[in-house]
Length: 238
Image: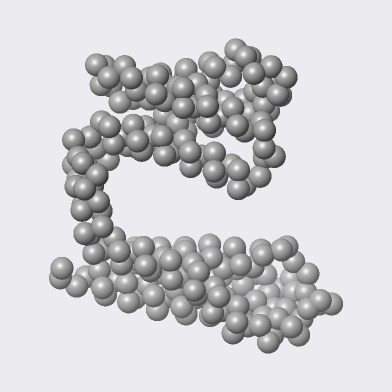
């Protein structure tokens, strides 16, 4: 795929980021929308989204970009005050915006769905990377949880207190970073990450500290192994 089309997509995404995270005054807009759906700032924000996308794309004959992005932005943001602001709804809201921008992007590039799919899914390296990240995020976490279950029981509930599912998400982010560092051959950063996490041991009793260390080393071992295998597969001739 031509690099210019990737740049075009990045421009569209950047226009959304500017609108949603720089120009938007969340609390003020939500407060007024809940009282009056015709509040002027609500529609101004949509106009800013459409105008930025149109300017960044710089295809002046395609004025429909401005209206498509503006109207979709207004429609999507109008749902936000109806729902409690949770991480799930925030992600769904942002996903909806991105899907609209992807549709606009698709309308601007001279590729068919078939050609796009062929370029994306025929790339063996893309499949290798997706599989590697999926493996260390989900199955690896389940495996580590089962392996360390016997020790977790020894420190619960009296000696172990923590946020609900915090360990699960810490482990996922840890393995994600380790795999990313391995794939970029930044091995020193792996050591820095593990060293920074080991500080947790000093704030816990012996059993809890050993439990954290077992989980960390298991996570490190799996991530490094998957990273080495992934690098080997990526270097294989197609």
